[in-house]
Each structure stands twice: as C-alpha cells, then as structure tokens.
Image: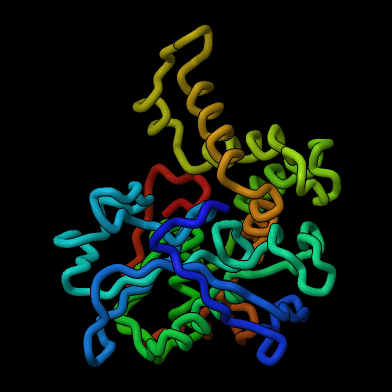
Length: 310
C-alpha cells in the first residue's frame, strides 16, 4: 500500500474498544485511512461523506495541481457538484480493503503475521460501522449527505437505514438494496479464478507475487459485468490492434492494472461482502428496513450496468 501525502490514518478500534462484526467475530485493532477536502464549518454542519466502490480508496479527487488525479475527479472540488468551497468532504477507505484501512494484508496483532485468509468475513454494514467510528473520532455528529456508487451506493443506503438520525441526504448510485442471485454468480466465478491460481496458496502468499493471473481474470470478468453489449459496441466495436480485439486489450489492461495496486485477498473479501449485502438483515422485512430511512434519498440507476441494473 502506497501512502499518499494527504492520507491520514486513525485508530478506530483497539483492545479496549474492539469491533464486533456481523459474523460474530471481534476485530481487536482497526486502522482507518481517510482524506478530507474543504473546511469544516464552526457548527460542523457541512460534512459530506463519500463512500467508494469495490477497488476504490480514500482519494476521490486531487487536493491541488501537484496531486494525482482521483477516481471521482469531475465531481469533487471547488465549484464542482460536491463543492469543496461549501462542503467539508470526508472519504475513507473501507474495512477489508488494502489502501490504508485494516484488511487481510494487515498484521494480525495476535500472530504478528498478515491475516490472509484468516481475516474475518466483513459486510457492508461492518464497513459503515467503521466509518461511524471514524466520524465519532473526528467529532462529526451529522452529515449533509452520504454518496457513493456500486459498493459505495450500498454503503450510502446502509448508512440511511442504520443511522437514520445522522444525515440529511443519501445518494445511492447503481446499487441495490440486496444483491441478486445473478450478481452473486458473477462474484462466485471471480473468486474461484483467484483461488484456483496456484500462487494464491490458500491466502498465504505474502512475500511473493501472489495470484496475479487469477486476480487479473477476476477483474476482467468484473469489468464485463459493469457494461452492456451496447456500451461495449459503442466503445470498442470489432476494432483490432496487435492481432487482438480492442475489447481484449481493454480487459488485459484492466486486469494488469489492478494486480499492481490491489491485494487479491482483499478482492475476495470485498466481493463476498457484496454478496452478503442486504439492508433487511436483522429487520422484520425489506420494507421495514427502508421505513427507518429519514433522509432525503436520491437513487440513480445506470442503464449500461448489467451487474446492478436500474
């Protein structure tokens, strides 16, 4: 994990205050990585929480002209839709990831070795609980908006259900209230691609390259599910380059790019968290869970997304 100059890391769980996960296990130590943009108002009432998608991180936008481009660059910044001249923006890396927040690649304090496949299974709700602890540490008691797409949209909706009194608005982009069997099926195949790579070594590959080929295949499958046939035809058609179709070059690039920046075990755990996503868990019904929501909610569907269609 490469530490960015604007990234901060804070302890949100320790042996005195461990986090009880949905799976029933305790995490005795959790570090949360986050970045902030803009200025916090004296009343602390201008906070927007951005929650990222599957392989995202705490860096949605550049902080200055010398900073690297973020994954939501057109939307966050001075004069942008999420205007940092007005709002104090917080974006944290999710629990289970590998971009600064505790995940499978982190050191297990009980063993002194990386958790690997021994990391407890986490859920979208667990991610939200960690974000809540982060905000508590920062003295933030209310949010103007929680916004995110795909896995981020799941978190935004979970925020609205779990902490209904804490926010004014939630923007849920390309995300369902619960994951469908077809979406789970895609993720199952992606996980198997990683786990069947001999270099995965039952998750104990740290110190070696790890399951690069399996992770690249899993990422290629994921990229296919994010786009419809019509959108791929418009982007790539049947054009060829270097004896390969452009769509092949695109998938190869996406796979190799992810291998360079993401931990395979984290990918497995986050895919499973997507599968487990269901805001109704623990409530009498799906409708009962949604009735808890007090925030104004904007739901945006993406017509070209076959994984989470409108």
